[in-house]
Amino acid sequence: MFKLRTALFLATGVFLCMQMGCMRPPEAATTIPDTHAADEKAIRDSEAAWVRAFATKEPEKAAAFYADDADSMLPDTPLMAGKEAIIAGMKPELGDPNFSLVFAPTKVEIAKSGDIAYSKGWFKYTTTDQKTGKRVGQAGNYVEVYKKQADGSWKVEEDIATEQTPLKVLRND
Image (cartoon, rainbow, N blue to C red; front, top):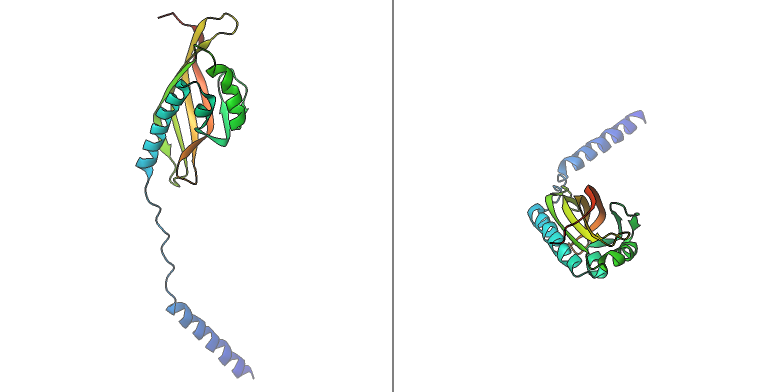
């Protein structure tokens, strides 16, 4: 009986070794196409289009660049969480006749995974001081965190800005 068990055990081991030897090696992981340059261009183009959308002074157009669950953290402004809150926060600003916002990225980085990116750059903002009624301006820096959407477009998930200069009265040029 002992010899039979040993023989079966050895036969099973040999069989398994033969099976494993006959198996094909696993397929190489599918290579993700390198879309880095196209993604960087898409984000830079998107930010240029976003500046044009702000110039329309239409909150829905300006907010179209945000993901539905985005957050906006701007100087001297409470956190705006979600696209609806961002639109509501934009309405008074965009209704101001002195409002203008220009910005441009100085750097865009795409994650190796290709689904997350960030841009950083500078901004210049003009509005009306609510206390004095005078035209005021501010300059600063920003970081946008982007997430690639199912349709391949990029939407802002986090909008973060810091002031480099505080709001100050501008000369009437």
